[in-house]
Image (cartoon, rainbow, N blue to C red):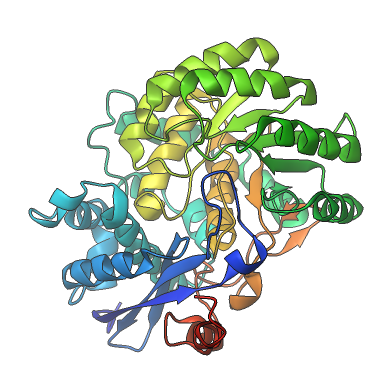
Amino acid sequence: MPGDKIINVSVRDVRFPTSLEQHGSDAMHTDPDYSVAYVVLETEAALKGYGLTFTVGRGTEIVVCAVKALSTLVVGKTLEEITGDFRGFYRLLSSDGQMRWIGPEKGVIQLATAAILNAVWDLWARVEGKPLWKLLVDMDPAKLISCIDFRYITDALTEQEALDILVKAKAGQKTREEQMLREGYPAYTTSCAWLGYTDQQLTQLCSDALAQGWTKFKVKVGADLQDDIRRCSLIRKLIGPDKTLMIDANQRWDVNEAVTWVTKLAEFHPLWIEEPTSPDDILGHASISKALAPFGIGVATGEQCHNRVMFKQFLQASALQFVQIDSCRVGSVNENLAIILMAAKFNVPVCPHAGGVGLCELVQHLILFDYISVSASLSNRMCEFVDHLHEHFKSPTNIRNAHYIPPVDPGFSCEMLEESVKKHQYPEGEVWRAIEKQGKL
C-alpha cells in the first residue's frame, strides 16, 4: 500500500442543538445536545479515513483533547503496519505507559481511542473498496482473530474458541449475506417515545411509525412511575398486543427500586428493561435479571459498558439477556468483535445501541457481520434505529420496511458532509453563533 503513511490526524467538536426540542431526552439525560468528536486521518497519498465518537454536548471538548493526545501514536504509521498487527496497534493506543493511567480502557480515553480506530477501519475498508461489514465478512477468520486483543478475557473466550465460532459459521454464510442484501436486518424504533415528548407527540409519532411498517418500539421510563404507566399504556394500546415493546430507564434506579418499578410495568409485557441501574453494577444487573425472569422480562445493557472485560463479567454472571454493543463506547471494531464472539459463546443475542449522531450508520456494519459470520440467527435480535441527523452523513442509513439495508459505499459510513460539520462546529459554527445571539446557550 504505497503512500498510505498517516501524516495528519484532525479532530473537531461538532454539536447539534437537539435539546431545544427534547430529542434524545430520557430519565438521566434531560437536555442532550447530540454531538461527536469527528476525526479525519490523512495519508501521504491524499487518502482519508473518517471516524467519530458520540457524546451528548458538554464534555465533547475533553474527548477532542484526548484524541489530540493519542494522535502522536498514529501519525507516521502506515495502514499496512497497523493492519498487519492490529492487535498490537490496539494495545499501543489502549496501553500507553502514561496515557492508560487516565483509563485504562474506559471513559474519555476509550471514547477517543474508538474515534481514532473507527477512522482507521474506515480507511482500511475504503482502500479495499468495500463497506466495512463486507470487509469483515470476507476476511479470513485467522486474520480477523488477529485484530482482537484477548488479554483479560481468555477465561471466557480463547482465541481457538473464537476461531471455531467463525469457522463453524462459514456454513450458510453466502445465503445469509444474500438474505441481508435482499431483506435487510430487523430494526426497532426509539424515535416515538422520548421522555420529554407530550402524549400528543407520542400518539402521532407512534401512529406514523405503524403506518411505515414498524413493529418494535422502545419507550423511555424511569422519572415518574404513574407517568410511565400512562405512557406505556398509551403505546401498548396504539401498537396492539402482538407487537414488541421495550422499556429503557437509562440507569435511573437502585437495584430494589428497579425490580419494584418494572414489576408494576409488567402488565404491558415489555421484552426487556434496558439499563435499569448503574452500568457498572454487574451483580446488581444479575439480581434484577433473576427477579424479573418470572415475568418474562429480560435485562438489556451495554451502551455505557466500558470494555470487553465488563461484558465478559456480565455474561459470566448471567446479568443480561440482551447484549447492547455500541460503536463508540468501547475500543471500536476490534473490541466489539471480541464482545460479539463472547456473546455467541454464551448464546446471548446482540441487539446494538444506536441513534445519536452516526451510531446507526456505524453499528449496522457490526450487526450485519454478527448475523452473517457469527450468530447465524435472528431470534430475539434487532438493531436500534433513531431517526435523527442522518441527513448530515455522506452515506446515511437506508431503512426499508423497518430493516437496515446493508450499505454499499466503501468505508465505515462515518464521513459527514463538510457543510454540516462547519455549520455545527462548536462554538464557532453558524448554528451555535445564532443560538448564542438568541441567548439560548
